[in-house]
Image (cartoon, rainbow, N blue to C red; front, side, top):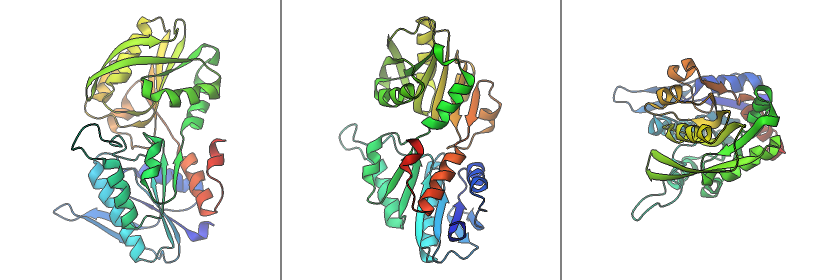
Length: 314
């Protein structure tokens, strides 16, 4: 299997790509992914990939558009080099929050990106915790959506007394995700009911559930500005929670999010390494990065050997 596999990495998350390669015992394929003076992307693959099963590891995180272009051009290079199959491994799928029309004359950008990847020549998609599961239907090619919950559950068990834990969804839209994790650790569920006045801002309105005397764990797929988490932590503590932590898959953490979380009443925030951690994240006293390289590596191995991927979370 490994002799037929080729792993390639763009510039978005090199540490994760190297960790996946180490897990698989397979070196990253030598390639140049660089910029011309005018910032055009140039890709050159330095090894033979003819007839090989190829995997491009590339999160479409900030700068999102640059990383999408890298992924598209790497795909084109592999297709023209006669790779047998091209799988785009996208741990964080950018534009996923634009999965519907929120108003008239607005785009569905997640569908546009799916079309771009398919037309470029991608044969299969592997991603982690899509913002909305229906995005899988935007692709006309096989799409595997991994869940980070198993890794989070292990970490929660190691760092918490489960008898005192209550899982909390930071909004009504995330109830399904939070309920699934709560079921895995046999913990009760609470919901933060909030009203969002405008994008990037939220106002906590009510707590659904009794959180008094509980160690609350907020669960979500994306943390961007951090405002929702900080407001939810304040509301839960005001309602009698002992402390509040958060487990979030994708740590976008744009703008002043890291400083906001560091100054908040959150005991800790745990994010996975689907997005490469910045220096600010690495030195923050209450932010910790949980690696899911082994999960992605195992999924790649199973795809290459035509085994079941869904059994990873059975």
